[in-house]
Image 1 (cartoon, rainbow, N blue to C red):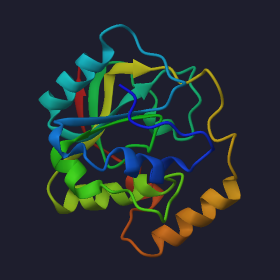
Image 2 (cartoon, one colour):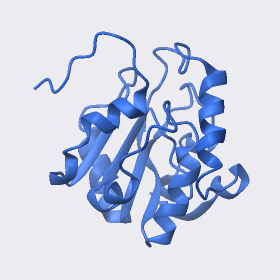
Image 3 (cartoon, helix red, strand yellow):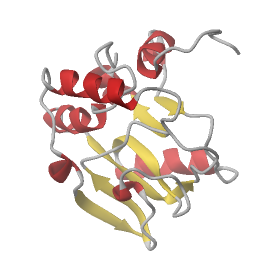
Image 4 (cartoon, rainbow, N blue to C red):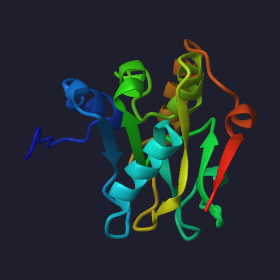
Length: 183
């Protein structure tokens, strides 16, 4: 089913807000870029592991050959999952209904989403929700380099403006593993 057709480039997160305006009837919201690869059955396994870890916000770990801005999101062999204070804004995130009620809409302030991943842990922790990275399910993000088709300067400016208006964690605070789930 096609919900919307866009013929001109638009910033990602305001577009997601429009697409997700009526998403309150779903148990999970899955946001995926179009340049990632999974094994067959990966999303079902991911949601099963998220449920068993009680993660309201999560993402699969990235394979070691993926484009990665933050090493924290790369797979850690020997683990099923990690409860963290950081889930990156993409390229694939799962948001459980109770977290979606707190995190949506993303807002017009941060058009490409940069910085939201430092705001989310503050919100999640305030309401006693857990978040993490699922190492038992990996995604490859190697088809094309991310963030090449928009202005990094504009995305940084949006991020700094948004962070000036909301509580957030520093990178050092966010890149923390709180609990591990061995295989």
